[in-house]
Image (tube, rainbow, N blue to C red):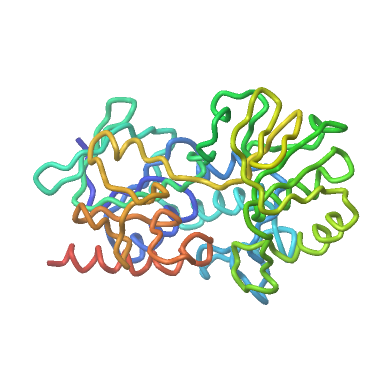
Length: 335
């Protein structure tokens, strides 16, 4: 069994930043990744715009000031997800990070102060400290609505790649965030489009909250709604879906496809099977301000999983917490 001072699960932006910090602090670490670097980001639509600027004037996308994304030939001020994946690859190579790729973690247990990481290949690793940075993209969230599960007309916005399958079709988008806005703008004028939200749409330029609809979508979205290229249905509550019929509390709608832009709930089955960690109502682990599990000592979370403050949901928000996590681990290693 191979042992390290620290094992990091996931080679996305949070895992890579944690790896860079570990290397800088001279911590003996290893990153275990189920696929290639940035595997989860590779499932995102390649031309999807990042919602954080990648510009020298305001850089909220780089995962380290030592190697900013705008040094690469990316579109400014907002690069796309494919360019971000390329950046993650370049970043891992730049700092020569120790990554074990194409290795699936299936179970983690803790025995006598050591985390035992079991992989699909049968190989095991051990460490006194563990950081889970596996992200949230695996947990596409669908509300608990009758008729959603296994319904062929239902899909998640994460799986939306092109408008072509939806031309001249009746499409219902459910959601009030940036993903809903992005898909709605592409389908507007190409599909008979409906946008249903439980509450009124909220915009970044008014609220200054980064997870509200950003300026790159706001102007056209408002205009398309006013022109009725998008049939906006605020205050909608769905009771159920029967085949291709969506049943609201006060109306019904027949559509060819329902696209849920309803975000994510993280899935961490490798922790559930071994450590059985507690989660809050949104399936996030209970963590301290340093990203440590409130239940299991020396188990840390990085990235959006460390949801100790709202800003940790967005890229530039969670990155500032990782050095705090790493310094906490370093001090304990010295004890």
